[in-house]
Amino acid sequence: LSAFDRFAVLSLFDSDSNTRFPQTKFIDAVRWLPQLSAFNHFAVLSLFYSDSNTPSLEIHSLNPQSQTLTLIPQSTFSPPSRISSLKTSQTPTHKPLIAASTFSGSLHLLFANAIDASLEFECSVPAKELHVGVVSYVDVKD
Image (tube, rainbow, N blue to C red; front, side, top):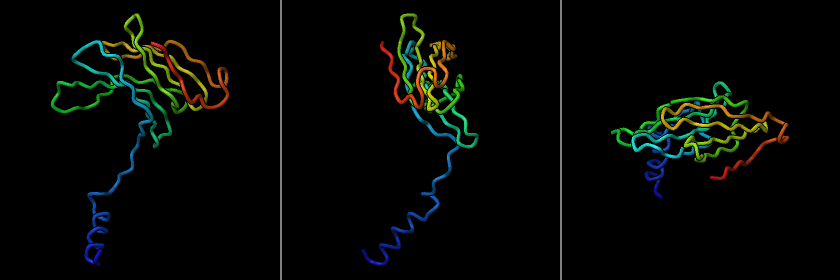
């Protein structure tokens, strides 16, 4: 490359259009909830807010018929630590099951209301009662 070409390439990396902005939340996992309606799709997001050092499990809705595809928060669950594994499954009662394990070793089972995307707490196993350390994988059977 000529000196001019090198300058042009370097100026691309120094331009404001390529600047990365710090994010306040990290997405650790995304799972779709089983769909019961053609109008709304729901996604379960495992989030970590770095500014407050807090984890969150959130259900967001997505309307595929909308002109702009935007995730809209519907409900939230606050686990004791960052989520290490996240799974969803359909149940015979048509309430999707959400299973989440954490880095502190806890396990959480929740049901989601497929109509309004609210979360119903089912059960929780505290850290160190089921497993000492990180629960790196959780699975559910349909």
